[in-house]
View (cartoon, helix red, strand yellow):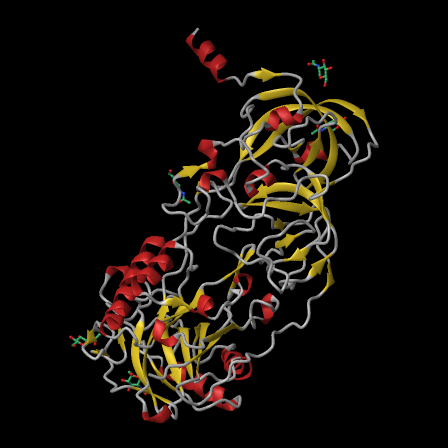
Length: 607
Ligand SMILES: *[C@@H]1O[C@H](CO)[C@@H](O)[C@H](O)[C@H]1NC(C)=O
Ligand SMILES: *[C@@H]1O[C@H](CO)[C@@H](O)[C@H](O)[C@H]1NC(C)=O
Ligand SMILES: *[C@@H]1O[C@H](CO)[C@@H](O)[C@H](O)[C@H]1NC(C)=O
Ligand SMILES: *[C@@H]1O[C@H](CO)[C@@H](O)[C@H](O)[C@H]1NC(C)=O
Ligand SMILES: *[C@@H]1O[C@H](CO)[C@@H](O)[C@H](O)[C@H]1NC(C)=O
């Protein structure tokens, strides 16, 4: 008796005569999850390698409830063709490949109850015409209005299971179309494909944050959910891997689904580029040095794991000369030690930097001098053995370290009366636990050699490479707001650096302080909100009035975004100009020299 009861309670309840929209329901999870259903009628709209998709012949009027569903079963699918109307039963399953993703509703273990007819006409829903336009800003109702709200991961879609609001929230919109056959008219690539050829696109619907190149730029409270990823084609063909930001593509028809952390369309066949965007490369910067303190050019470039034998070293040199027009001064990040990722005790980067300087000269550039402080072996993160660090290049005929007195890797710099620095250059608070496995900022004090009308013209620089966002969860994942990886350490790093700068400015409110580098964060997110608040520095993009949508140095997932910044003190804002030079974001993946774009500023550092 006991075992019979146990069997009964475990047996899935049986439900009959359901529409597909009833199965999907108006929330993320099906109200029939784990139940066996019968008498589900649908028209086959597409077939994939492991199943097929059916659409209800009796749709409801509720836009929250998808009218289509995935029927999972390879052998079952082989028995049907597109246009067959079938009555099917099976078990409703919520599937995800890892717990960080959102569930996909499927009808599994399908059993044919009836083949009703064949040859029904199957028409895709045109997005933005047969459906509403996708929402353009917000991703999920559980984000409190912004994917970057802190704290992260305070709720899970799989637990909260909110009612869909496809008008406001991007995930809800795409969820409400899960399983549907759709068409994207006039698609444009808004990023480069990943290694599988998966490509983010926008269609001919309303777009927010569109940049001049045709992509979409992340904005404050704008996570661009109107973009959609195009995944692996259903017919076994492969998407091209050389698509570029802004390329125009042929019309795409396919099935909306969710996999590997994102809503996506599985196209019936591969993406085709119909019009390549030109010119492939941007114009060189228009900002050129005036050769004196009222017009010094400052370049910044994350040179992506540069070592003496890097194949991309001559290309980095050519970018600096041809596209950045050999700035007077360079903030570099990701300079590796003299033998790159060879994991031994070598930490110096003299050879790496000497090789780069020689390549710049060979490319027609100036003879740069450099300075850096080698890190303690294996303590600053990045590729194991590489010992990446920040470094400065400068034109010694124009700029020199003010009373050089370099600190070593463990000596903490301090602001002395003047203001001046205890170590020049020196690292900021290198023993602080916030810098564990991360680069320590390098602060230096400089003077312009050719002084304008005899005036003193000193300036301070801080070169940063904050901790990266490793461990972030998908923007369309289960955790809401999504996990912004290493946020806590980055916040403390920003506070430490900003506090040091504040000390300089407390001693001289008119001091010229220029901070640059790879902050691994956006200006409107907690670490950099704190950075500007504590330091009093100004975001150079704001000072130079760069259009919001043109503020990008990096492509990640669906968006153009800005990880690399310059922040300057009030004393350095007079006539400030700034440009992001898109030599890497615009080209195809195989042609990029670094994963970041460099930037150039023209600043007046005269006293
Ligand atoms: C199956 O559904 C149809 C309507 O879709 C209904 O007419 C029929 O009675 C149902 N059959 C069973 C066995 O529930
Ligand atoms: C496919 O159709 C054949 C013939 O009707 C049937 O014997 C077989 O069980 C079907 N396969 C599946 C997986 O439903
Ligand atoms: C490399 O740099 C370190 C630290 O600046 C210095 O002590 C050393 O002499 C340099 N080595 C060479 C070969 O220039
Ligand atoms: C740095 O210099 C300090 C003395 O100021 C010394 O105690 C320390 O060992 C040095 N660290 C390294 C890594 O050379
Ligand atoms: C989010 O938090 C839950 C606990 O509520 C945890 O199980 C999950 O791993 C977290 N997700 C991420 C991506 O860290």
